Length: 68
Image 1: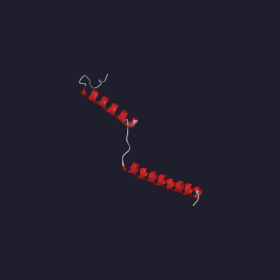
Image 2: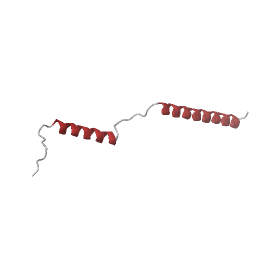
Image 3: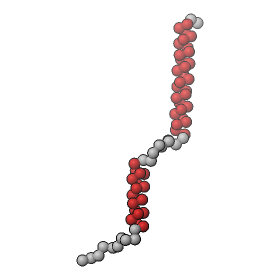
Image 4: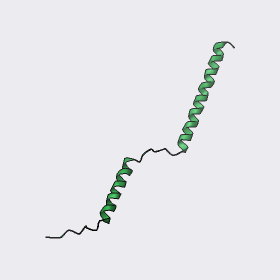
C-alpha cells in the first residue's frame, strides 16, 4: 500500500466514525426532552391572565351594575 491508499482508507474510516457519532447524537437528542430556557409566549400570557383574574376575584369592592 502506498501513502495515498493509506490516507484514503484513513479518511474513509474517519468519515464512517463521524457518521456513526452523528447518528448516536440524534438518537440521544430524540430520547430526552428539549431544554427550555424560558416559558413560551402562550404560557406567559396565560399566567398573567390567571394572575389578573385572581386579583379581580379577590377584590371585594366589585358590585353588580345597577339598572337605571
